[in-house]
Length: 457
Image 1 (cartoon, one colour):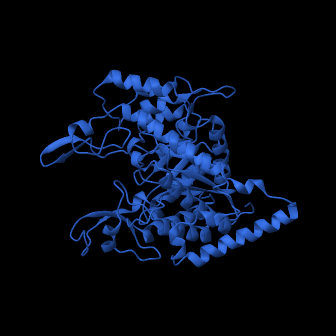
Image 2 (cartoon, one colour; image 1 turned 180 degrees about the vertical axis):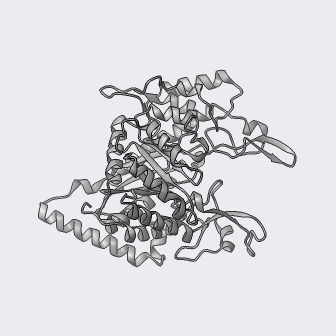
């Protein structure tokens, strides 16, 4: 365990993005109950993910990391969870086929119930109230009662996370992800997508390969009947994370058992702040968003603080610059980390740096400002990330995308050529625009063509 660290040592450091609960006694009661409940994940799973991330950093596998920008309690349903799994399975099938590498799947689910905010309050018609920070902190309705942070929602967030994880594990263990039957993952769009024929060829090719291998082996390849899924969420409410941070038998140190992979966002990345202090002492792999404001000195200091023994698979750097800035600003950081001999896992987030506001000229939202992302910019950032790492002699280990298994219209472009005027047709996100299922699959296909091939399937 790092010196002078405990699950609550973060309280002595400057903290941001923490909700202010008016009832301290109710908060302590909720945290005590959470602390007495079973963990959501296990230390064995966390260590397995760390090993897989180390392999991805060496170019031996690829990380597919995706899900909603923010979960909400209402979407904790079998249909919603299954659709997220389906699109991640379809994308990973494409990546396995195209890259010839093992794929590590990480979902932005089972805990992504809080979001950072640029301002602590929101004003409407002269009324100022606390900002909505996510379903496990307060409620979206614009009333004082709804916007007041409620500690009982932390318990509901824990429960929704447990229900989501339970269903995911039941599906995976029950053969939902069986490569023998990838047709079962199909979402409706496969029948009418411009990519349908190419996707079907991949499904048929993998099926033929499996049948050939099983003929040689004289039986079913059991490993092809299930896959591993890991969870992640942005580390925000430190009191909640502390309540689920525990020591386990026969393993050294402390594990944050609320998720497999917590990450530190742009608004909480102060290397002298509470979030970094908390992550310094946990054994999980830790993600760190790296954007245009990052300096070489601060990045190197952050990596060394999180991994003083330079552990492989421990620090995941999630670059998010935008298509117009990554070519200029990422290479010096990659070069500095490489030259310092630091073990990190580089992952590209092509979503957040490409957010923009448009004003449709026609349709239901004509003349209104709408937040969106262009598919072309998303793809361009991923392509540049591959090129940068190739030039620097490093590996791009994976991608981190916000997506949904639904037929939404939140990002423009893609095979169907969605335009600004199409956004109002099915824009459902309350936070950030997501790739719809068709755009997500198209992105996977284009990534598979670009990723250097490996030898393992």
